[in-house]
Picture 1 (cartoon, helix red, strand yellow):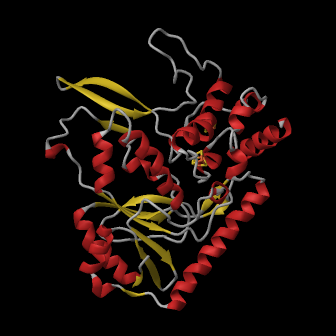
Picture 2 (cartoon, protein in one colour):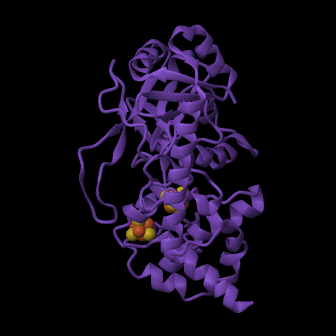
Picture 3 (cartoon, rainbow, N blue to C red):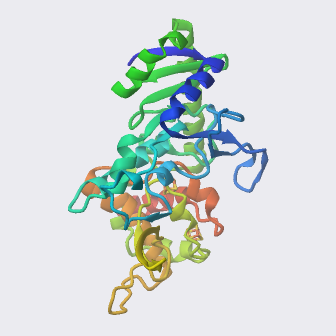
Amino acid sequence: MENFFISKPDFADFIKEISRDFVTFYLKEKPARFDWKQGKRKLLYWQKYDDNLEGLSLSGVRAQDSLKQFVFSCKEKVSDDFSDPKNRKKPVLLVGAKNCDLQGLDITDFVFTQGDFKDPFYIKKRQDMFIIASDCANPLETCFCLALDINPYPEKNYDLGLCDIKDGYIVEVATQRARNYIAEYKNKFSLASNAQLQRKRDIRDTASSDVAFNISKYGVPRKNELQGVVEKCFDSQIWKDEAKTCVECGSCNFICPTCHCFFLGDSKEENKNIRRKIWDACLYKDFAVVAGGANPRKRLFQRLRNRYDKKFAFFPNTLGIIACTGCGRCISGCPGKIDIRRILKNMAAEAKAAV
Ligand code: SF4
Ligand code: SF4
């Protein structure tokens, strides 16, 4: 892969130039605050760009909210005539996407672009989106991507990849669209030197060993140890015990880069029938209720188990990939302190003991 170097002022100019074609969002640092799981950490969120990159932080971790919102909004009108260009929005440019979110796009791409029904709204946003990804240099204690064979730096589903080496960024070019931008603004980019490339390798090695340390501290099983565990633990007490503190808030679903369930809601507005696609959560009591009123997952522990079944059994069996990227958001977002690392660890141990 081609690697270039760009200084931070030149990068700011570059974003200013190319933002004319997009609605741009970038990773911005929130003022430090105390987080019950992370201690005092600077957290990040997606800031809409308004001619400057104030507070841009590319060496931290993923934002608190995943990037799925840019292709699959929490509430989206889907009754507009899609063939009419006035109903299409300007494409999105993201600056700073992390690998756990990029890997999550494999799941939403599968759901919305393959199969019998293809979602034209998703497809258009996804095709037009330009993604500038970035390395994680400072993983959180809740990050466990490496356990699932996902690295803390961009590997797929991005156009340009950045590694913050303090005096500027090392830039990886992953697509032809990105190559075209580099050619257009070639005065801002130079070939990365061997010393700069070594700094990037060092940053990646340090981040990987930080994540590996967390994985071993919390005993998170590796991907190969998770094969078939949900099926083996289907009748386990784990689900009833863990479900005791769940308050059915749906936060784990909404915050997750791979959760994609939605329902369609109809309303009448200004004498027009409007249909909206709205995020749903499989932990909600009525999630699986069918038209006749029957509920196949009446009990909360069944719904919690279903979430793990989808992620660690259904998707590996259907698509060959686990529908969890180890981003750790559901750990810090759960008011019931339900920790996916603990559930995976207990499942793997129980499945092993049963052999
Ligand atoms: S299940 Fe939790 S850790 Fe896994 S991708 Fe979803 S939010 Fe992240
Ligand atoms: S975030 Fe926690 S409490 Fe809320 S629905 Fe998910 S498991 Fe239950």
